[in-house]
Length: 160
Image (cartoon, rainbow, N blue to C red; front, side, top):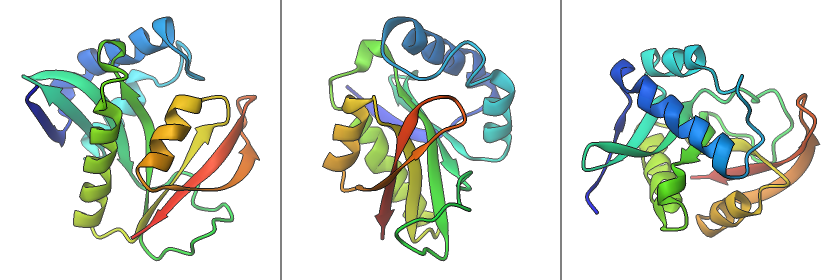
């Protein structure tokens, strides 16, 4: 496998949306047909906040890395320059092969390059595979909250 981590391009949107659709249809997720929407992904790409992991030019994993959309919450670490991760997703064809861990480690390294002093994000409490991966990569579960979408989440954090 020849993996390459890079910023997504607007020409990637259809492939990115297909991965989200495949995950919604074939695996566990709290997402639905309305979220994540193409316009959100396009905005992320334009703002240079959406990354892809490719295997031989085919996208296998995707994620937002940018301004933390939930920064007004009470976080354990009072970071000066935090970034957030959101909409992290691995194509069902590539799940359970360590691709998510590779993507997450690339996101951590990229956050450091961008000058962040840590990361904050949410993960649904009913997503044990994601929780296991985040803990394996060194994130801390620092509390629980309730989303506006009807599910509970854990607040995951990492301080660099």
